[in-house]
Amino acid sequence: MNERQNFGLWKNADRQKETHPHFKAGKPIEIDGKQYWLSGYINGVDPDKLEAFLDQLTERNTKDGKTRPTISICLEPAKQQAPVSEDIPF
Image 1 (tube, helix red, strand yellow):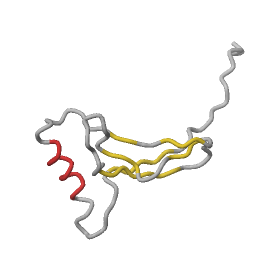
Image 2: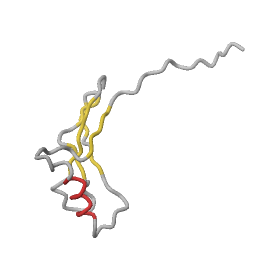
Image 3: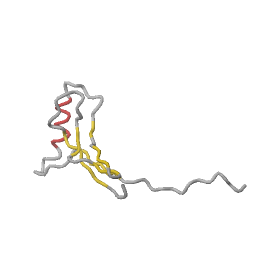
Image 4: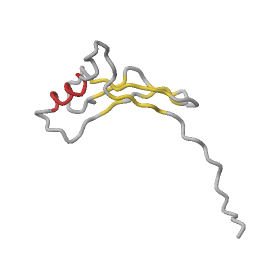
């Protein structure tokens, strides 16, 4: 990956099991010629309140009539640093 990539995580409306992610990307991410799926999970929310919590998160992204991802993520390569030499001249 040589450039910055932006992704959105959307509420997984097709979630049917506890092992399925709460959020998923709309398309796979490609890094160095390989494709990966980006998923997200929420921890620490009472299971009885989880659906209302997810609805509250996603509701604020549709109020103006436009649908936006619940979570926006930017993925970019780290800057390569020159190797540190162990031959310190002191």
